[in-house]
Length: 157
Image (cartoon, rainbow, N blue to C red; front, side, top):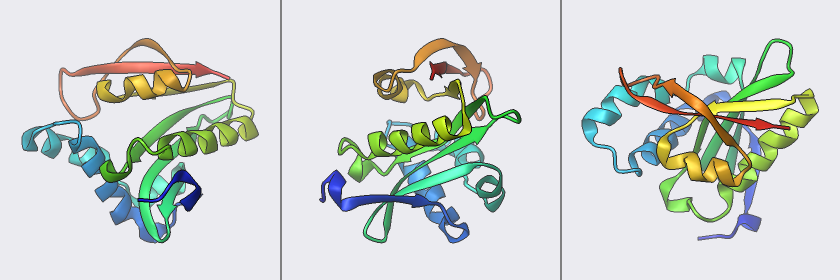
């Protein structure tokens, strides 16, 4: 495996949607979720052309291979935004790819003039976001599993 210096970031392209969905599903499943849980999450994890058109998506690539993705959705007034679809291929986790993608989203948030970024996060990913400076600000309903509550986190810029 390469090092973060072998990895580059680029904006996602329309032709990437199937690969982004695959990376998202495999990353989520790597947290130990069973097939029933994953089936319930499939729609929420599916990246569509509409998502790419409405949010700012970035991909991390090693050569031509997409190994991670993240998106930022500015609010209408662009003073804040929400992070979506932040996933790293399980075979590439722990190599700094997430930090590279987070640095890009932070750069973009500053370019928009955002003062706050928020996200609803899988409990397994909360430690990563805490390391990036996020604080738990409450709980939110899962977008996939009725009755499940997940951490709602914010970062003041």
